[in-house]
Length: 483
Image 1 (cartoon, rainbow, N blue to C red):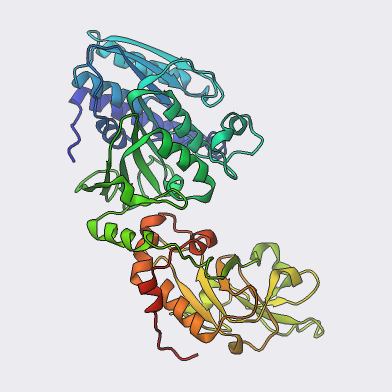
Image 2 (cartoon, helix red, strand yellow):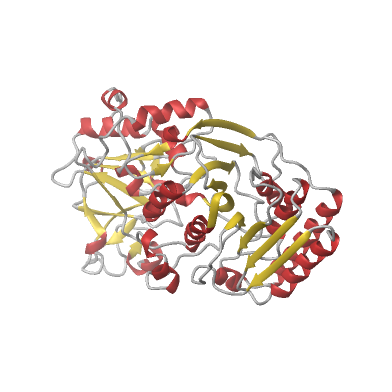
């Protein structure tokens, strides 16, 4: 993929905006930015996003451009500069932002661009209103946005206005995307940088249905690392750049780069049908033709962990909330009548095997058995333990452990909150079931599929429950292991 470079004057302008953003970020409290969901992009991302538009609209028309969540205007300026390079002479720009601290700076930046392009028929309007609840009576040719990211209350005004796409607790960035779709003209295009979570998250299910019905997903760009996408920001979520249009297309481009330098971009063009997991409208993001073949294996299957009769739950012991009941020793030296049972953490499982107790001075290995903790404990049975977190760079996304009932001499035990556990609701997993399930979950194919499906490093119970089970993989799962 080739992204045209802006001329040197415009690069200097974008870098000036970037410096303004850096200064603003450093002097503005984290609490304030978190409240507004503010994360600012750098000039390289702005240029890349502007370069994704295909500019099919006639250059003789006056172009309507929207930037919702404009910040200092770096995305707007990158896009309108690109429009001028493409031969557009008449541009009307609408910008939304709520932050009164940056409205004046935003206005000055757009005015500077206007003064530098006197030969362009250019008008603009900055609107300091809530973009989601504002009644907008016009449509746009091009929309570009780095929307705010934060969760909304179910009873918030924004949630009520956009109730048709709400399933569970929404994130405001999803509403910005949905409203953008509503505001696009026929053949219009929009490019957003957002968290990846909308592609597969449970709470985004209705939004994905709306998205796939009302817009065409044309391009998604993935970063191999999470660092440096946002200047001076500590972002843990995986972010992607996505392009949508109101045109029809049967293929999608998925590209990837190491980081926001956009060096050595690799891309594939594949049919949209091959990346949609139809049961939940999940958008899978393969990065190679080999990964497309993995999708075919899994998407042809309709059995899941759940339909086979298994359940997955999350460990209930949140350590900091139950500190008074935790102990490094099985015996209480002060009160011998207090009873303790094993408490297992991620660290207790290494290479799929249980290691207990650990000589770990930071992780208590026991939890008191009493009326205050009884609801946090589970019966000692055969379980498959699944670690809830991994790093994107980690060798395997799904990391399991075998917990055999006969390994712990106890009636009950506690599982720390960073562990999921797979079990049989009525009865106990047999040894054969455990080894078969464990081998399947640890397979290279499942790891590949899970990475394609879910960029999040959190392994959610719902994702495992809904994991398709290809018969040839599952039935062929054998495991030589001593229990």
